[in-house]
Length: 478
Image (cartoon, rainbow, N blue to C red; front, side, top):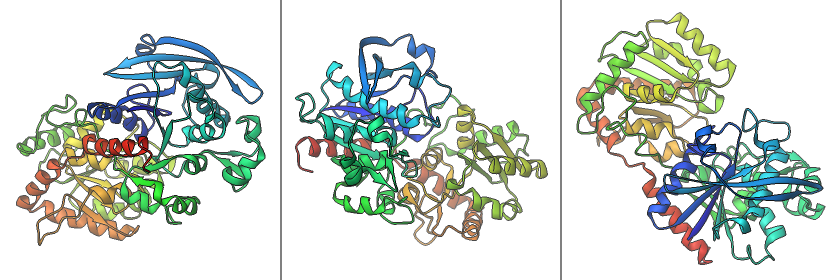
Protein backbone atom coordinates (compact mmCIF):
# COMPACT_ATOMS: atom_id res chain seq x y z
CA UNK A 1 0.00 0.00 0.00
CA UNK A 2 1.00 3.60 -0.59
CA UNK A 3 0.54 5.72 2.53
CA UNK A 4 1.23 9.45 2.84
CA UNK A 5 1.78 10.73 6.37
CA UNK A 6 0.61 14.34 6.71
CA UNK A 7 2.28 15.94 9.73
CA UNK A 8 3.20 19.34 11.12
CA UNK A 9 6.52 18.14 12.59
CA UNK A 10 8.85 15.18 12.28
CA UNK A 11 12.14 13.91 13.73
CA UNK A 12 14.94 14.49 12.77
CA UNK A 13 13.96 17.72 11.02
CA UNK A 14 12.07 19.59 13.73
CA UNK A 15 10.33 18.69 16.98
CA UNK A 16 8.16 20.20 19.68
CA UNK A 17 6.66 17.02 21.14
CA UNK A 18 5.84 13.34 20.81
CA UNK A 19 4.10 13.75 17.44
CA UNK A 20 7.48 14.36 15.82
CA UNK A 21 8.83 11.12 17.32
CA UNK A 22 5.86 9.16 15.94
CA UNK A 23 6.22 10.70 12.48
CA UNK A 24 9.92 9.86 12.47
CA UNK A 25 9.74 6.29 13.74
CA UNK A 26 6.47 4.73 12.54
CA UNK A 27 7.08 5.04 8.76
CA UNK A 28 10.34 3.09 9.11
CA UNK A 29 8.57 0.23 10.87
CA UNK A 30 5.72 0.22 8.36
CA UNK A 31 8.22 0.04 5.52
CA UNK A 32 9.69 -3.12 7.09
CA UNK A 33 6.21 -4.64 6.77
CA UNK A 34 6.07 -3.91 3.05
CA UNK A 35 4.13 -0.66 2.87
CA UNK A 36 5.46 2.33 0.93
CA UNK A 37 5.23 5.21 3.39
CA UNK A 38 6.16 8.81 2.64
CA UNK A 39 5.83 11.94 4.75
CA UNK A 40 4.74 15.48 3.82
CA UNK A 41 5.28 18.45 6.14
CA UNK A 42 5.98 22.22 6.12
CA UNK A 43 9.48 23.43 5.28
CA UNK A 44 10.09 25.47 8.41
CA UNK A 45 12.87 28.03 8.55
CA UNK A 46 14.18 26.31 11.69
CA UNK A 47 14.94 23.04 9.89
CA UNK A 48 18.69 22.43 9.93
CA UNK A 49 20.70 23.69 6.98
CA UNK A 50 22.28 20.24 6.60
CA UNK A 51 18.83 18.95 5.57
CA UNK A 52 17.88 21.95 3.45
CA UNK A 53 21.06 21.58 1.41
CA UNK A 54 19.99 18.07 0.38
CA UNK A 55 16.41 18.92 -0.59
CA UNK A 56 15.55 18.66 -4.28
CA UNK A 57 12.94 21.02 -5.72
CA UNK A 58 10.33 19.00 -7.60
CA UNK A 59 7.89 21.65 -8.77
CA UNK A 60 6.45 25.08 -8.06
CA UNK A 61 2.68 25.54 -8.03
CA UNK A 62 0.17 28.12 -6.85
CA UNK A 63 -2.28 27.36 -4.04
CA UNK A 64 -5.60 29.17 -3.95
CA UNK A 65 -6.61 30.18 -0.42
CA UNK A 66 -9.98 31.72 -1.19
CA UNK A 67 -9.04 35.09 -2.81
CA UNK A 68 -5.29 34.59 -2.14
CA UNK A 69 -3.04 33.07 -4.78
CA UNK A 70 -0.04 31.74 -2.83
CA UNK A 71 3.30 30.30 -3.90
CA UNK A 72 4.00 26.66 -3.07
CA UNK A 73 7.28 24.91 -3.65
CA UNK A 74 7.38 21.13 -3.28
CA UNK A 75 10.77 19.79 -2.27
CA UNK A 76 11.92 16.24 -1.67
CA UNK A 77 14.52 14.52 0.48
CA UNK A 78 15.25 10.86 1.14
CA UNK A 79 16.53 10.14 4.64
CA UNK A 80 17.22 6.70 6.13
CA UNK A 81 15.14 5.02 3.43
CA UNK A 82 12.06 7.25 3.78
CA UNK A 83 11.04 9.91 1.25
CA UNK A 84 9.97 13.25 2.73
CA UNK A 85 8.16 16.05 0.90
CA UNK A 86 8.35 19.63 2.14
CA UNK A 87 5.82 22.38 1.45
CA UNK A 88 7.83 25.57 0.92
CA UNK A 89 6.34 28.99 1.58
CA UNK A 90 8.56 31.38 3.51
CA UNK A 91 5.75 33.79 4.35
CA UNK A 92 3.98 31.08 6.36
CA UNK A 93 6.82 28.89 7.59
CA UNK A 94 10.05 30.88 7.85
CA UNK A 95 9.49 31.85 11.48
CA UNK A 96 11.27 31.38 14.81
CA UNK A 97 8.67 28.91 16.13
CA UNK A 98 6.29 26.40 14.58
CA UNK A 99 3.12 27.27 16.44
CA UNK A 100 1.53 30.05 18.46
CA UNK A 101 1.31 32.74 15.78
CA UNK A 102 -1.62 35.14 15.32
CA UNK A 103 -2.30 33.66 11.87
CA UNK A 104 -2.03 29.93 12.65
CA UNK A 105 -5.51 29.48 11.18
CA UNK A 106 -4.29 30.85 7.86
CA UNK A 107 -0.94 29.06 8.00
CA UNK A 108 -2.42 25.62 8.48
CA UNK A 109 -5.38 26.22 6.18
CA UNK A 110 -2.71 26.87 3.57
CA UNK A 111 -0.78 23.73 4.54
CA UNK A 112 -3.86 21.51 4.33
CA UNK A 113 -4.81 22.95 0.94
CA UNK A 114 -1.22 22.71 -0.31
CA UNK A 115 -1.01 19.01 0.61
CA UNK A 116 -4.10 18.25 -1.48
CA UNK A 117 -2.94 20.42 -4.39
CA UNK A 118 0.49 18.73 -4.29
CA UNK A 119 -0.81 15.17 -4.72
CA UNK A 120 -0.97 15.18 -8.57
CA UNK A 121 2.58 16.56 -8.67
CA UNK A 122 4.21 13.91 -6.47
CA UNK A 123 6.09 10.91 -7.87
CA UNK A 124 3.76 8.85 -5.71
CA UNK A 125 0.07 7.91 -5.73
CA UNK A 126 -1.18 7.64 -2.14
CA UNK A 127 -3.98 5.22 -1.40
CA UNK A 128 -4.26 6.42 2.19
CA UNK A 129 -3.68 9.85 3.74
CA UNK A 130 -2.73 9.43 7.40
CA UNK A 131 -3.20 12.85 9.04
CA UNK A 132 -2.03 13.79 12.52
CA UNK A 133 -3.46 16.34 14.98
CA UNK A 134 -5.38 19.53 14.30
CA UNK A 135 -2.82 21.14 11.98
CA UNK A 136 -3.78 18.59 9.31
CA UNK A 137 -7.47 18.32 10.25
CA UNK A 138 -8.83 20.10 7.19
CA UNK A 139 -7.12 17.67 4.78
CA UNK A 140 -9.76 14.90 5.02
CA UNK A 141 -12.57 17.45 5.21
CA UNK A 142 -11.52 19.41 2.11
CA UNK A 143 -10.80 16.14 0.30
CA UNK A 144 -14.43 15.08 0.75
CA UNK A 145 -15.92 18.52 0.15
CA UNK A 146 -13.96 19.69 -2.88
CA UNK A 147 -11.75 17.01 -4.45
CA UNK A 148 -13.67 13.72 -4.54
CA UNK A 149 -14.93 14.22 -8.09
CA UNK A 150 -11.38 14.47 -9.47
CA UNK A 151 -9.91 11.15 -10.62
CA UNK A 152 -6.60 11.59 -8.74
CA UNK A 153 -8.51 11.73 -5.44
CA UNK A 154 -11.53 9.50 -5.97
CA UNK A 155 -10.19 6.40 -4.22
CA UNK A 156 -8.02 7.96 -1.49
CA UNK A 157 -8.98 6.90 2.05
CA UNK A 158 -8.21 8.85 5.22
CA UNK A 159 -7.10 8.16 8.78
CA UNK A 160 -6.78 10.84 11.44
CA UNK A 161 -4.74 10.31 14.60
CA UNK A 162 -5.50 12.30 17.74
CA UNK A 163 -2.26 12.78 19.65
CA UNK A 164 -3.70 15.27 22.14
CA UNK A 165 -7.38 16.26 22.09
CA UNK A 166 -6.70 19.37 24.17
CA UNK A 167 -5.25 21.20 21.15
CA UNK A 168 -7.98 21.49 18.51
CA UNK A 169 -7.27 24.42 16.19
CA UNK A 170 -10.27 26.65 16.96
CA UNK A 171 -10.63 29.78 14.83
CA UNK A 172 -13.28 32.45 14.06
CA UNK A 173 -16.16 31.54 11.78
CA UNK A 174 -14.90 34.02 9.18
CA UNK A 175 -12.14 31.65 8.03
CA UNK A 176 -14.79 29.42 6.46
CA UNK A 177 -15.10 31.60 3.36
CA UNK A 178 -12.05 33.81 3.78
CA UNK A 179 -9.55 30.92 3.91
CA UNK A 180 -11.23 27.59 3.25
CA UNK A 181 -13.58 28.60 0.41
CA UNK A 182 -16.49 26.77 2.04
CA UNK A 183 -20.07 28.05 2.27
CA UNK A 184 -22.17 28.37 5.41
CA UNK A 185 -23.88 25.02 4.92
CA UNK A 186 -20.67 23.24 5.95
CA UNK A 187 -20.49 25.36 9.08
CA UNK A 188 -24.04 24.71 10.20
CA UNK A 189 -23.96 20.97 9.54
CA UNK A 190 -20.40 19.87 10.31
CA UNK A 191 -17.83 22.48 11.39
CA UNK A 192 -19.59 24.64 13.98
CA UNK A 193 -18.04 24.55 17.45
CA UNK A 194 -19.44 27.09 19.91
CA UNK A 195 -19.63 29.68 17.16
CA UNK A 196 -16.17 28.91 15.76
CA UNK A 197 -14.53 26.57 13.23
CA UNK A 198 -12.70 23.62 14.77
CA UNK A 199 -10.03 21.81 12.70
CA UNK A 200 -10.01 18.77 15.00
CA UNK A 201 -13.79 18.42 14.67
CA UNK A 202 -13.45 18.70 10.89
CA UNK A 203 -11.14 15.68 10.87
CA UNK A 204 -13.32 13.64 13.24
CA UNK A 205 -16.47 14.11 11.15
CA UNK A 206 -14.78 13.48 7.79
CA UNK A 207 -12.06 10.82 8.24
CA UNK A 208 -12.76 7.20 7.39
CA UNK A 209 -11.05 6.00 10.56
CA UNK A 210 -9.86 7.82 13.69
CA UNK A 211 -7.12 6.58 15.97
CA UNK A 212 -5.77 7.63 19.33
CA UNK A 213 -2.34 6.84 20.72
CA UNK A 214 -3.47 4.37 23.40
CA UNK A 215 -6.52 2.15 24.03
CA UNK A 216 -7.32 3.76 27.41
CA UNK A 217 -7.19 7.28 25.95
CA UNK A 218 -9.59 6.14 23.22
CA UNK A 219 -12.12 5.25 25.93
CA UNK A 220 -11.39 8.30 28.07
CA UNK A 221 -12.00 10.90 25.36
CA UNK A 222 -15.54 9.58 24.89
CA UNK A 223 -16.31 10.82 28.43
CA UNK A 224 -16.96 14.48 29.36
CA UNK A 225 -14.00 14.79 31.78
CA UNK A 226 -11.43 13.99 29.08
CA UNK A 227 -13.46 14.74 25.96
CA UNK A 228 -12.68 18.47 25.68
CA UNK A 229 -16.28 19.18 24.52
CA UNK A 230 -15.92 16.70 21.66
CA UNK A 231 -16.93 13.58 23.64
CA UNK A 232 -20.43 13.46 22.14
CA UNK A 233 -19.08 13.58 18.59
CA UNK A 234 -16.49 10.93 19.41
CA UNK A 235 -19.15 8.67 20.91
CA UNK A 236 -21.19 9.07 17.72
CA UNK A 237 -18.17 7.83 15.73
CA UNK A 238 -17.13 5.08 18.15
CA UNK A 239 -17.28 2.38 15.47
CA UNK A 240 -14.58 4.23 13.50
CA UNK A 241 -12.43 4.88 16.58
CA UNK A 242 -9.35 2.74 17.33
CA UNK A 243 -6.71 2.94 20.06
CA UNK A 244 -3.17 1.91 19.11
CA UNK A 245 -0.35 2.42 21.58
CA UNK A 246 2.65 4.48 20.54
CA UNK A 247 6.07 2.88 20.68
CA UNK A 248 9.58 4.19 21.13
CA UNK A 249 12.58 3.95 18.85
CA UNK A 250 14.40 0.95 20.29
CA UNK A 251 17.66 1.99 18.63
CA UNK A 252 17.73 5.52 20.03
CA UNK A 253 16.61 4.39 23.48
CA UNK A 254 18.83 1.39 24.03
CA UNK A 255 20.90 1.31 27.25
CA UNK A 256 22.95 -1.49 25.73
CA UNK A 257 24.31 0.82 23.01
CA UNK A 258 23.41 4.37 24.08
CA UNK A 259 26.47 6.60 23.42
CA UNK A 260 25.14 9.27 25.81
CA UNK A 261 25.55 7.22 28.99
CA UNK A 262 28.73 6.46 30.91
CA UNK A 263 28.21 2.66 31.09
CA UNK A 264 26.10 0.51 28.79
CA UNK A 265 23.95 -2.23 30.30
CA UNK A 266 21.00 -4.51 29.58
CA UNK A 267 18.61 -6.75 31.50
CA UNK A 268 21.36 -9.32 31.92
CA UNK A 269 23.76 -6.80 33.45
CA UNK A 270 21.59 -4.44 35.49
CA UNK A 271 24.42 -4.01 37.99
CA UNK A 272 26.13 -1.76 35.43
CA UNK A 273 23.22 0.68 35.81
CA UNK A 274 24.70 1.68 39.19
CA UNK A 275 27.72 3.23 37.47
CA UNK A 276 25.36 5.56 35.62
CA UNK A 277 23.72 6.50 38.90
CA UNK A 278 27.03 7.35 40.57
CA UNK A 279 28.05 9.38 37.52
CA UNK A 280 24.72 11.26 37.57
CA UNK A 281 25.10 12.04 41.27
CA UNK A 282 28.59 13.38 40.64
CA UNK A 283 27.43 15.51 37.69
CA UNK A 284 24.74 17.17 39.81
CA UNK A 285 26.89 17.52 42.94
CA UNK A 286 24.82 15.08 44.99
CA UNK A 287 26.21 12.53 47.44
CA UNK A 288 27.63 9.63 45.45
CA UNK A 289 25.88 6.73 47.13
CA UNK A 290 24.41 3.77 45.27
CA UNK A 291 22.02 3.00 48.14
CA UNK A 292 20.16 6.34 48.17
CA UNK A 293 17.07 6.07 45.93
CA UNK A 294 17.14 8.66 43.14
CA UNK A 295 13.79 9.85 41.77
CA UNK A 296 13.57 11.85 38.54
CA UNK A 297 11.05 13.84 36.52
CA UNK A 298 11.74 14.50 32.83
CA UNK A 299 8.77 16.43 31.53
CA UNK A 300 7.16 19.52 30.19
CA UNK A 301 6.52 21.48 33.39
CA UNK A 302 2.75 21.94 33.12
CA UNK A 303 -0.35 21.08 35.12
CA UNK A 304 -1.23 18.33 32.63
CA UNK A 305 1.81 16.42 33.85
CA UNK A 306 0.50 16.28 37.42
CA UNK A 307 2.94 18.79 38.86
CA UNK A 308 0.17 20.32 40.99
CA UNK A 309 0.22 17.05 42.94
CA UNK A 310 4.00 17.10 43.20
CA UNK A 311 3.95 20.62 44.66
CA UNK A 312 1.40 19.67 47.33
CA UNK A 313 3.47 16.86 48.83
CA UNK A 314 7.02 17.59 47.64
CA UNK A 315 8.29 18.36 51.13
CA UNK A 316 6.89 15.05 52.42
CA UNK A 317 8.57 13.19 49.53
CA UNK A 318 12.02 14.68 50.11
CA UNK A 319 11.69 14.17 53.87
CA UNK A 320 12.68 10.59 53.05
CA UNK A 321 16.31 9.65 52.51
CA UNK A 322 16.20 10.24 48.74
CA UNK A 323 17.58 12.40 45.95
CA UNK A 324 15.39 14.17 43.38
CA UNK A 325 16.29 15.48 39.89
CA UNK A 326 13.96 17.47 37.60
CA UNK A 327 14.65 18.15 33.93
CA UNK A 328 12.25 20.22 31.86
CA UNK A 329 10.83 23.55 30.87
CA UNK A 330 7.30 24.92 30.83
CA UNK A 331 5.11 27.13 32.98
CA UNK A 332 6.94 29.78 35.00
CA UNK A 333 5.06 28.66 38.11
CA UNK A 334 6.69 25.23 38.05
CA UNK A 335 10.09 26.37 36.81
CA UNK A 336 10.34 28.81 39.72
CA UNK A 337 9.02 26.23 42.18
CA UNK A 338 11.69 23.66 41.41
CA UNK A 339 14.44 26.29 41.34
CA UNK A 340 13.34 27.36 44.84
CA UNK A 341 13.22 23.80 46.12
CA UNK A 342 16.74 23.23 44.83
CA UNK A 343 18.04 26.33 46.59
CA UNK A 344 16.45 25.23 49.87
CA UNK A 345 17.48 21.55 49.62
CA UNK A 346 20.91 21.52 47.96
CA UNK A 347 21.81 18.11 49.36
CA UNK A 348 18.76 16.41 47.86
CA UNK A 349 17.20 18.36 44.98
CA UNK A 350 18.49 19.44 41.60
CA UNK A 351 16.53 21.23 38.85
CA UNK A 352 17.74 21.65 35.28
CA UNK A 353 15.30 24.13 33.75
CA UNK A 354 15.67 23.67 30.02
CA UNK A 355 16.06 20.63 27.84
CA UNK A 356 19.12 18.63 26.92
CA UNK A 357 18.62 15.36 25.04
CA UNK A 358 21.94 13.82 26.10
CA UNK A 359 21.33 14.72 29.74
CA UNK A 360 17.83 13.24 29.52
CA UNK A 361 19.36 9.89 28.50
CA UNK A 362 21.80 10.11 31.41
CA UNK A 363 18.97 10.80 33.87
CA UNK A 364 16.90 7.90 32.54
CA UNK A 365 19.91 5.60 32.92
CA UNK A 366 21.00 6.91 36.33
CA UNK A 367 17.67 7.16 38.16
CA UNK A 368 16.00 4.44 40.20
CA UNK A 369 12.46 5.81 39.97
CA UNK A 370 10.65 7.92 37.38
CA UNK A 371 7.69 10.03 38.54
CA UNK A 372 4.92 10.77 36.01
CA UNK A 373 1.61 11.53 37.82
CA UNK A 374 -0.22 13.01 34.82
CA UNK A 375 -3.72 14.48 35.00
CA UNK A 376 -4.23 13.01 31.52
CA UNK A 377 -1.75 11.35 29.17
CA UNK A 378 -2.75 10.31 25.63
CA UNK A 379 0.18 7.87 25.49
CA UNK A 380 3.31 9.14 27.18
CA UNK A 381 6.85 8.33 26.11
CA UNK A 382 8.66 9.03 29.37
CA UNK A 383 7.39 5.91 31.13
CA UNK A 384 8.26 3.75 28.09
CA UNK A 385 11.81 5.10 28.00
CA UNK A 386 12.14 4.69 31.76
CA UNK A 387 11.08 1.02 31.52
CA UNK A 388 13.61 0.47 28.73
CA UNK A 389 16.35 1.82 31.02
CA UNK A 390 15.23 -0.19 34.07
CA UNK A 391 14.06 2.94 35.88
CA UNK A 392 10.84 2.03 37.65
CA UNK A 393 7.88 4.33 36.84
CA UNK A 394 5.44 5.76 39.37
CA UNK A 395 2.38 6.86 37.38
CA UNK A 396 -1.29 7.69 37.60
CA UNK A 397 -3.63 5.22 35.90
CA UNK A 398 -4.67 7.32 32.93
CA UNK A 399 -4.30 7.06 29.14
CA UNK A 400 -1.21 5.31 27.92
CA UNK A 401 0.24 5.18 31.43
CA UNK A 402 -2.56 2.79 32.35
CA UNK A 403 -1.84 0.66 29.28
CA UNK A 404 1.91 0.31 29.88
CA UNK A 405 2.59 0.34 33.63
CA UNK A 406 1.19 -2.35 35.93
CA UNK A 407 1.52 -1.94 39.68
CA UNK A 408 3.81 -4.30 41.56
CA UNK A 409 1.89 -7.02 43.38
CA UNK A 410 3.87 -8.46 46.28
CA UNK A 411 1.68 -11.58 46.46
CA UNK A 412 2.17 -12.63 42.85
CA UNK A 413 5.48 -10.77 42.42
CA UNK A 414 4.25 -9.34 39.14
CA UNK A 415 4.18 -5.81 37.75
CA UNK A 416 6.65 -3.36 36.27
CA UNK A 417 6.04 -0.21 38.31
CA UNK A 418 3.80 1.55 40.82
CA UNK A 419 0.46 3.18 40.08
CA UNK A 420 -2.37 5.14 41.70
CA UNK A 421 -5.84 5.88 40.33
CA UNK A 422 -7.28 9.07 41.81
CA UNK A 423 -5.86 12.49 40.95
CA UNK A 424 -4.93 13.04 44.58
CA UNK A 425 -1.63 14.21 46.04
CA UNK A 426 -1.72 11.91 49.05
CA UNK A 427 -2.51 8.88 46.90
CA UNK A 428 0.61 9.80 44.93
CA UNK A 429 2.62 10.25 48.13
CA UNK A 430 1.52 6.85 49.41
CA UNK A 431 2.54 5.26 46.10
CA UNK A 432 5.98 6.92 46.23
CA UNK A 433 6.41 5.63 49.79
CA UNK A 434 5.35 2.14 48.69
CA UNK A 435 7.94 2.21 45.90
CA UNK A 436 10.65 3.32 48.36
CA UNK A 437 9.67 0.45 50.66
CA UNK A 438 10.31 -2.11 47.93
CA UNK A 439 13.46 -0.33 46.79
CA UNK A 440 14.99 -1.36 50.09
CA UNK A 441 14.18 -5.01 49.40
CA UNK A 442 16.98 -5.66 46.94
CA UNK A 443 15.76 -9.05 45.70
CA UNK A 444 12.37 -7.50 44.87
CA UNK A 445 13.96 -4.49 43.22
CA UNK A 446 16.32 -6.51 41.05
CA UNK A 447 13.37 -8.52 39.74
CA UNK A 448 11.39 -5.35 39.08
CA UNK A 449 14.26 -3.84 37.08
CA UNK A 450 14.69 -6.99 35.00
CA UNK A 451 10.93 -7.18 34.36
CA UNK A 452 10.84 -3.55 33.28
CA UNK A 453 13.73 -3.99 30.86
CA UNK A 454 12.18 -7.12 29.36
CA UNK A 455 9.10 -5.20 28.13
CA UNK A 456 8.83 -4.64 24.39
CA UNK A 457 7.45 -1.20 23.65
CA UNK A 458 9.21 -0.78 20.33
CA UNK A 459 7.24 0.33 17.29
CA UNK A 460 7.17 -3.16 15.75
CA UNK A 461 3.97 -4.31 17.48
CA UNK A 462 2.12 -1.04 16.92
CA UNK A 463 3.21 -0.93 13.27
CA UNK A 464 1.59 -4.32 12.68
CA UNK A 465 -1.70 -3.00 14.08
CA UNK A 466 -1.52 0.09 11.86
CA UNK A 467 -0.69 -2.06 8.85
CA UNK A 468 -3.70 -4.25 9.53
CA UNK A 469 -5.88 -1.17 9.76
CA UNK A 470 -4.55 0.17 6.46
CA UNK A 471 -5.44 -3.12 4.77
CA UNK A 472 -8.99 -3.02 6.13
CA UNK A 473 -9.32 0.57 4.96
CA UNK A 474 -7.89 -0.10 1.49
CA UNK A 475 -10.28 -3.01 1.04
CA UNK A 476 -13.25 -0.89 2.09
CA UNK A 477 -14.19 -3.14 5.01
CA UNK A 478 -14.32 -0.44 7.70
